[in-house]
Image (cartoon, rainbow, N blue to C red; front, top):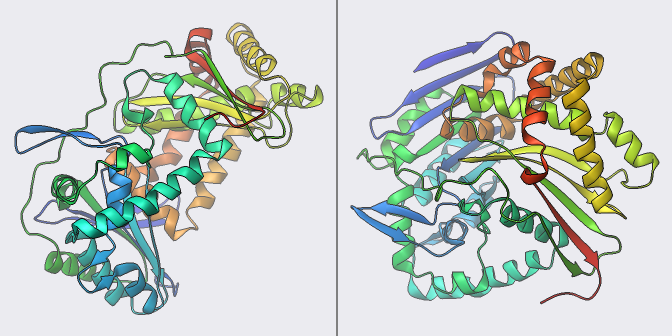
Amino acid sequence: MKKHIYETIGETVYQEVLENGLHVFVFPKPDFGQCYAFFATRYGGMDTRFQLGGKWLDTPMGIAHYLEHKMFDTPDGNALQTLSATGASPNAFTSTAITGYHFSCTDRFWENLRILLEFVSVPYFTKESVEKEQGIIGQEIRMIEDNPDWQVFHMLLEALYKNHPVRNSVAGSVESIAEITAETLYSCHEAFYTPSNMTLCVAGNVDPEKVCALAREILPKEKKPVIPRDCGEQEPEEVCCRENSRTMAVSAPLMQLGIKGTPAPDGDAQLRQKILGELACEALMGSSSPLYSKLYTQGLINGGFYCGYMDYPGCAFLVAGGESKDPQAVQEAILAEAARIGREGLEEGLFQRLKKSAYGSYVRGLNSFENLCVEQARSFFAQQDPWTFPEVFAQLERADAERLIKEWVQPERTALIVIRPGEEEQ
């Protein structure tokens, strides 16, 4: 195995590529009693259209999430219950770009890892169980659709993007999941749950070579090509819809303002833009910015107002949101502040403070086994080395953040979504 030592942050990572294409990453933690394993596939809510066996398949929205639920079914019962019976804490999630299965434990790690690798690599679906799950996930979908925070974010993605499948709801709709069959699930598993499209990340007091040996024993031996991602037709620079709203049972208007950016290519450039985007967003409208203080003093936002940088394969954007009595005034203030920064620049002291604060957050994240493994998996799929972030921070300058704000924060690149108090719209 290759051994990578990151002296600046005090981390060591062992890496191996198995004969079947699986990438294994192990973070040795000899002084800890807990172990964590994360088995992930490069498959998420955006991946509804793909090529398998030379043919294009269009699958229902929400199928990656549906498949995640069904993967716990085994001929002998349910893998979630099996893992819990050993004392492990198992779970799984599906995001826009990846699906991951994980557990943490303090005992019987190798037994738990075997269970994880076996149930994720060997699907077991029946017509009856698939139909039963439609009712369960249908209830889940209705619950999240009643959540104003979910609604405002989903509406924002639909407003920002015209073609990109990030517009897809990860959970799908009640109508879309009704189209899912056992045969479709098997096809998606065959396409995306192949070792060359997956990664296994482990942190704890474990032998890295033994992790690889167990993966070699259990997982399929054949190496298959990775399926290219379909991000839809090329996106225009401007947003799909500048403004949208609906009424729900909220006590005050809930807003999200999205700013459509230019995605960076996979690799080092994407990691650099991620860190730069976070800094630029904080400098423009974060809790330490002059604009935040001004809006808070004017009563236009409260302490729950937030901002951030987000990216998925093929797209990147800034987002700011929270409760506001006048969302349009907040939007106008953000655009005006961006124009001022474009003319006058950022205050150097503010930028350096934000840079140190962000760097500290990255370092604190190293204390979490879950964060280590999940971030390693996400970054691997994006062809990044996440543990080179100290070098990226060292290279970023105030002018870089000023340039991003000036180029991105333009009226035609912004979309405002507001959930207003009132009777629920159907």
